[in-house]
Length: 80
Image (cartoon, rainbow, N blue to C red; front, side, top):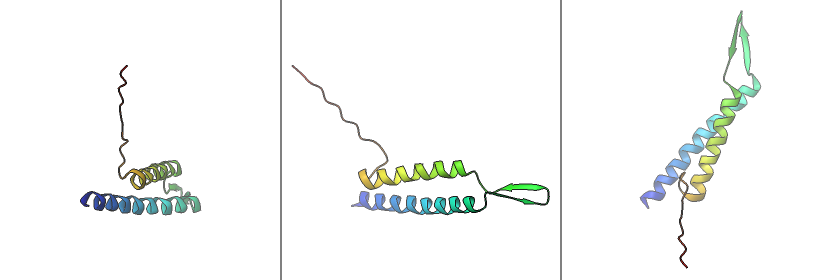
């Protein structure tokens, strides 16, 4: 039970971060950069934000599917 509560908390945490990254992506797409006087200001790198979104989506999928981010490995030994 404690493990499922921990997984649920991690899922909610990843969802919150993912929502923030979606908002950041939208802000970047609406105004990637702008000029103030002679200075060019870039809000953030779209590629980095989109890369992090993919990573967070994969992490969320793993948590919801397996309850962990780790992959489970099994081994079989066959004898004649």
